[in-house]
Length: 463
Image 1: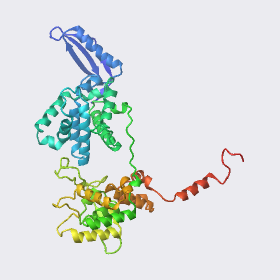
Image 2 (image 1 turned 135 degrees about the horizontal axis):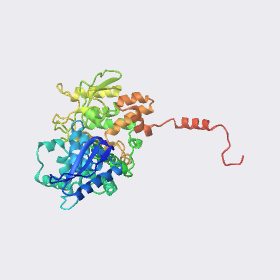
Image 3 (image 1 turned 180 degrees about the horizontal axis):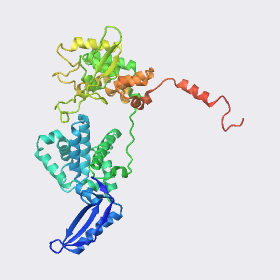
Image 4 (image 1 turned 135 degrees about the vertical axis):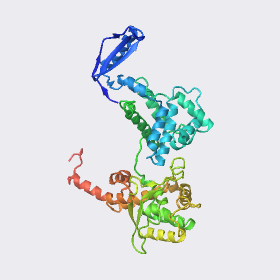
């Protein structure tokens, strides 16, 4: 909506042949506007308000003639309605996990931003109604919620604050800071993980930026409040990563107990694949599996588990392109002979002739996270000692991917090449795995010492 500071006020007008005879007239960038009242006092009061807004430096809307503050207030909607609108806007292009994460954040912040808590439904009922229906575009468009959820939704609609309240000078700090504090807690009141807080804060920021886009705010009020978020780091904790010898022991145990899954974990380690990418692996992706030497995998899809409520297909896995890549953009990963052997054996023994995907569940669907996660935990319990269990070594299947990347990094594989194989950018790979570089410590110490010079005197001592 266009605004201008070119505002001119006229004297009060009077037309004796009309019921509202006393008028206020002004122009914004040459466009004339007027309002009419029953008495001169009312007209004069309105003119005074408009002139005060102009003296404060407010711009005026060239379409409605209103000062910017009034124009934005008239466009304001409730926090609940804006959150639903923003959810619908992002839904079609968002990954299933992003949809779920946004809904989780909104289900926490919307109940906080209300006029009153009087008659507020049970917290769990309210959160379930918001998370499972209001901020799930697919379910909301399919029909009304359950009776209990409908009552909760009606309460939220009646009590949700106007979005403009979040930028009012008298309440901005209280509301923004209070929302951020609420997002930083779990349901039981304990502090949430730093990464979870960062994700929810990003959803809140996106909602406020959308309000700016709709001209409800001139700028995001989030930037006007100083709030210290919990410290978070993207760096991998090298203490949790298994070394090559330990990985071999873990895979050997899997081969004894669940031979149909040893190639799955092998892909995560030797090909540095994300679990969702391994789930989506097909025969066609096995570009080259020679009897001797290195092979090649070429794949372009991933199937992370997200829950059927958040996928377009209604399946538990979200079939989509590789992370940080366009649709149909493949990734080529050379694989070592030991993984080639694992895949050849897996294809021969566990993949039916007409089966496309290499790893499937018992009913023919995608291999579930609960299955490969449970088998992995059972393997860890048999192989690891109490100290390794306590340190959470190889706690997640994803840690196998991180361990494989770390091997490449410490083996001297150039970062651009390693990043290409792992599906990272070089900058992100270094940011995440910088703490995993080891070795050559004595070499760097020698170079530092040489740089300090050959003087054998120590500062502060008499020579």
